Every structure is written in C-alpha cells, then in structure tokens.
Length: 236
Length: 132
Image 1: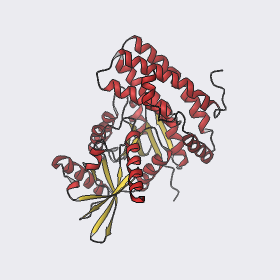
Image 2: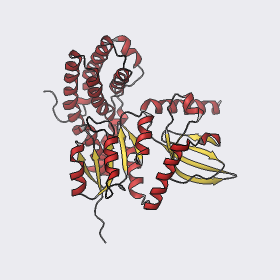
Image 3: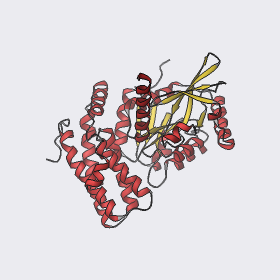
C-alpha cells in the first residue's frame, strides 16, 4: 500500500515563521500547508487530510487558544494533534493551551532541530484514541487536584530540552504536569509544563525522562549557566 | 540610548551558528533558504519599523507591542540575538502596563539602530540585492 505524504497545517500570522516552518517541514518529508488567517482554517481542514496542526498562540483577533477550542469542539477534527507555537512563553498560556488539548508547545524563534524532533515524534507516535482520552483525564486530574510531584521526585539531571527525575514510582508516558521544583523558583523560571517521555527502572528508583515545554530563550540561558556551574563544581 | 544598549551588551549582534543551521537546512531541501529568509526579513522589518514610528506618534503602546512581537521572530531565526533581545525587552516593558513614552521611544530608536547595524551581516549571505 502506498502511503500518501502527510500534511502538516501551520497557522501563523507571521510570514517569517510560516516560511521557516515550511522549510523544516519539507526537510522532514511532509507536506506543509500554510495559512495566515484563522478564518481560512475550517475550509483548509475540509479540503485536506491533516495529520498535525501547528498553531500560533499570539495572533490578532482570534487568539491561538480560541482557535484551539474551536477545533477541539468539532468531532471530526478534535483528534488532530495540535502543537502551539509562540514567542511568548508565559506559563499561564502554556497551561491553558495544554488544558484545552494542545499536545506540545514550541517557543519561537523556530529552532529547526527542536521543531523537527517534536513534530517527528508526534507524527510517528500513533497514540490510540483511548490512551489520548486517558492522558486528557490525567491532565484534568492534575489541574483539579494540584498534584505536587516535587514531594517525591528528585531532580537527577537537567538539560536544555528536558530533565530526568528520580522517582519512587513509575509515571505514565505522555503524562503532562507542572513542576514547582525549587530549582525553577530559584532560577526564576515559572513552573514549566513537563511531559513524561520515558520511564525506566534504575535500582530501587524509576528514572523518568521529561521534556520541558514553553521555555523562553532567557530561561534556557539560565539553565545553561546552571549546568555550567554544576559542571565546574564537579570538576573542582 | 546607551543605557538601554548597556543591558544588551552581552548578547551577540550576530550569531553565525544560526546561519550555518539554515545553510544546512537549505542544502538538505535544495533551496536557498538563507536568501529567502533574509529577503523576507528585510521586507517585513522595514514595514514594522515604519509602523512603530507611526504608532509611537499616536502613543499607541499596545500596537507597538504587537508590531515589535512580529519583528522579534525573524531576528531570532536569523541569529540577530541582540535585536531579538531588544524587541523582547520592549515587548515585556510595555506588557507591564507602566510604560513611559521616553523609554519606549529610546527602545524604538535602539531597535532601529541595531536593525541598520545588522544589515551588514545579512547582506553577505543574501544573493538577492536588498535595498538597492
């Protein structure tokens, strides 16, 4: 059976970001469909089989969150994974995008490597619908009950795109939660949303690898400096 | 202007590694990615800078915030780190809702100055004649 090339829809009012997204999507071997106005969205979804939507959060008029809610209300489109794209990594925006059903978050300016790795992972992961609902349930539950994972999770290592936690119990892959680990408040980084990517048994612990979403360039700089400091401390 | 620039002196004016990434991207898809992005950057940035000047005359800070947000993105893509940080700085400053005309104007002047200064870096990568 010949598999058709997957279409990735990008909605962004910024021409520069659309062009950049187009180039990266082409390199991934997918077909980019680019639109600048949210008013063109429904017609584009009706005319094309879309595998994933990349949606700008900060648009004039209809915001990305409004568009996200609109898509999630339509039964035939609600299962299309949506990745939010924004230059504003305010954690409140990240929280609300995720609580309304976005699966991930990319901070502008688009870094080809980060964009490619996130989109590829989402396109290749064929999460069954049941599991998708289960993840949504977990997100809602976490939002309602404010589960404090830092009570039992220790930070094992931290990089620019993710961190590893040492936890006494396993965490489900796909679970998204907000960390209020002291490290983030010390570095003045507002609770970044973390998504469990893998969970491996290590001695009596589980090593849980999480990707961090919605970090701004200045947050990344702080983490880089923090890591450099750790490395220099270890060396001395 | 010096007081604002002082806050951004540690940011690179031009980060060559970003252009290297784009050259690699262009080689992979057999398109002149760098030239296309630079051409669009010049076209959209000139409009943004003109808009900001007008919005400044109208004292419309919320519009300036939205315009500088547009400008910010392509600066980051092309490795114009200092210009990106200046745009980010102005956006955040206005977002605090306590913006003063004098500082907003200083930021806009710094952005225009830095934009003109970074042209020299981009021209060498751009095969299309810009602003001729």
